[in-house]
Structure formats: structure tokens, C-alpha cells
Length: 639
Image (cartoon, rainbow, N blue to C red):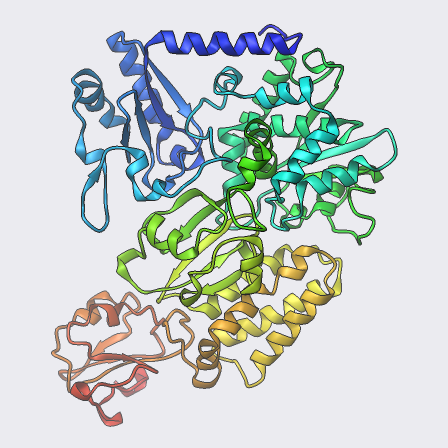
């Protein structure tokens, strides 16, 4: 790997790589080897293709790409130039694909995705509903290139923005371009990126620092991880441009949690390649500009996603937020002016420089420009990593990209913004997703987690689950977060266990608002959001848990009771067969449920062919009216 001495050297290399690629006339098999597909066997599929190609002596390139997005359907395989997209491929399928598709040109329909509504099998990736509405800017190279090859990145235009900046733009012009694009931070707060850079540049002094926040700790979120795995050079290039614009920045850090081994590996390799090629280190491309980047591995503390806590962690101290002001751009890492941006924010920068601020600002809404990446999970038919223009509605995501709810159940809500986000009911799904619209309904953009829930999900339990996460991850430094979240969680635990009491809802609201108003950092201030929004939109469920002592969704096993209406029972015995706790008892030509043994799993309710099993709170229909005397005894002593 020869070191590039000038901007012209990089241009010559890019042209050479492009011509070699065009003249090679080789087919390529792109296998998703991101974490999701690797867990499903993606690496084994890529290895099987390589062995089969070697055995046949074919001139075909096997490319292990980063995340292609549709993790649920992995391993994913894209055949080029045939433009054929296969899903759920196994190593055992490889010989058949090589024989029928590669050798004979015949597509294998069983690997095509069948539409959930019509059953039509789709050949091209771009025609699949999951991909149709996406606009991939941040994820532009994920699934397209080999993330372990800097030459692949350069061939598709990588580091072109850097050469443009170093050759023809002053630092002030770079900042002005970013400001004009209206790029806002993708870490959750949505602060103007250009303004942040400008404030830091204005600080006096010779030493400044740059940090990339890759500490993605939200449950079910994997956006930053996928970018670092699949396109690490886009983040590195964005950081180099930022360092040039801010000035007096010779050292940067990428903070990524150690639980992301593939991201750490690919990122470390990318940094090494960039240094060897002369794109990092001393005298970058002969410009006289020096900048290096170091990886800092986090130990998994959620609070270290907060900027000041992260800086303490990098310094070797315990990761705990500090009081602001002073802001990080004034006194951050080692008390020096510091800019901290998210992985996705830096990945946007090269595109903005190359395509222009006006182009980027034309995408999205009036105050939220560009795109956002979401991890779409939960009770939706299509799950995975998606990137959409700001302003796309929640309904479009759930019903167009996600193709609706699993088992065609009724959609109930979506949790947006991770454990610090809000629970949004289905009737508000026409709300456009942008920083301001989400805040107006009690949610937040966060880092991009989106969990879809159906009618079987209990919103009280959902709120309890998310609060239990944030309470455990609290650093404990400030009393509102440390004590307040504990008291709220204790109250929610009582409610789902059937011990709720009048005034609990009001207590949760008062305590939640107090925590939001007085906590030290943004994580503490947003911790009550799931509870407050679920009370705001699903108060009736809280009231049912507290006043009627039952869970309308039957999710809280400590609440409610099951009864068999004897007049309607046909004595089929199916309820007894499925009961793992042996709580369904047969006695004198009738069945009853022993409450002492019943764990309220609901299996008996699901299998009963005549609906004669009733859950407390469910109205008894006219066809199966039963009296208390007809209901079974509730103790084995009465057998």
C-alpha cells in the first residue's frame, strides 16, 4: 500500500480503480456479513460461494458486505449484474444457485420475497416494499462495498469530499456549507452541527479535540453499529473534514462499546488503511494538515452515551455527567474545546460536501433536513434497518415498509426514541417523523429506535420495562434521577403485580415531571418519557390495573383470573392438555381452573374451541352466561 503524497495521487488512484473494475467484466455475489446476517449464517454462505467458485474455476467476486438492512430475512445475497436479490440463503443452497442462476441464468423463485398481501414473488431488491420508500444517504455504501477494503470505498467516490475541502475550501467555507445544509446532530438532541463546529472554532487556544459518539446503548438499536461495520471510512472522512473546519484539532476519538466486536474490528482496519495510505496522520495528502484518530472502547454503560460522561470515560475517569455550562465546545475533553458528534452525523458530511448544501436541505421538512436511520423492530412483519427522509409518517413506516402487524393483529402503539422515547398510539401515526413533531406529542427522535406494539402488549408493562432499564443504568449522581426513577419503578412494579392503589397515576405524573425538570443530564431528563406518554395516551389501562385489578391485554400474569363456564364447556379437554402447570382439573364430568397453580399464561383461552374460558374483565356473552355456582372451585381443598 503506497502512501499518497498529494491530492492528485488520490485522484489517479480512484481513476485506476474505477477502470480496473469496469474492465474486469466479472460478476459479483454480495453476501451480507453484518452482525445480523452473520448470526444467521452469512459468513458460512460467503465461504460456501468462495469454495464453489474456486472449484468451478469461475471468475466471480464474492463480496462480504455490511448490513443490507433487512436483517430478519438474512442471510441476504445480491447477484450482479443479474440484479437478483435472494433472501434466507443457506450454505446448502449455494450449489443450486451456482448451477441454475449463475451458470444457466435461471432465477430460483423460492428465494424471492413473497409480498404479504398478494403473495407475488419479487426479483429486484428495489421493488420490495421494505426498500421502496427508503432514501439511503447515511447507509449509501452499506451492502454495496466491502467494508474491509479502502480501495472499494475510494472507487465509489470515497475521500473525494476530503480532496475537495483540502484543495478549494477554507475552514470557514466548510462550516458555512454544513450550516447551510441545516444538518442537525443525529445522536438525539438535534443541535445544529454547523453551529457547534463554529462555536468550537471560535474558541481561543492551540489544542482542541474531536469525538465520534458510537456508544449506542438503546435496547434493540443497531444503527451506529451497522454504519461502523459496513462503511467505516465514511465516518473517518467526515471526522477529518470536521477537524479541518474546526482548526487546531490534531487528535480525534471514536468511542464505541466493546460489545460491538465486528464494528471495532472493521473500524480498526479502516483506520490502519487510511494511515498507511496517507489519509490520516502527518501531512495528509501533502496539505500540511495533521490529524489522527484513536478508538476508545466503552464498557457498556448507557450513561456514557451522554457527552460529558463519555469525555470522563475517555479521560479514564468514571463516566458520570457533569454540570453545564461550560459547554463541551468551551471546555470538554481535558478541559479543552471539544466537538462531539454522532456516527450518523459524521457519515452525512462527505455527501453534503460532494452534492452541496442546497441538495441536502431539499430533503426533509422545514426544520429537520436530510434522512434518519431507524431500527424497525417489534410486532411488525418486516423488521430491520431503514433510512427515510425526515417527514415520513409513522404510518408509512409501519404499514408500507413494515407491511403491517404480525398475524394481522391490531396495531396499538410505537415506542420511538429508545428507552428515553415516548409511546405513540396508533391514532397519531400520521405524525411526520422529525425533531419538532415528535417532541410535540411527547416523544423524541433519540438515536433511532422504533418498536411497534400490537393489541396484546400491555402499555403499563412496556413503560415498566423501559423505566427498569433507565433506572438500572442511572449513574446515581443526581438525586432526582437516582431516587425518582427508583420510586417510579417501585410504583409500576406494584401496579403490574396487582397492588396498585388510588393516587398512583398522579404520583407517577408528578414524579416524572419533577425528574424531567431537575435531573442533571439529558438521560435523566428523558427517563420518565415512556411512563408519561403511556399515561397520557393509555390511562384507561393504568386504571384497569389499579381499580379493577386486571390487565386488559392479559399480559400481566399477576392480575386477573380465568374461569370455565360449565354450561358452555363441551368437555374436549384441550385446555387440560396445553396447561403446563396442571392447573386445569377434571372432576365429575366438568373442568375447573385451580387459581393456586394457574400462572395465567392464557394458553387455555387460546385453544378453547367454544370460547367457554373467561378472563376477568371480559364481558360474558349471552350465549355462555354462567352463575357463580357454575364456576369451578378455586382450591385443591375443594376437589
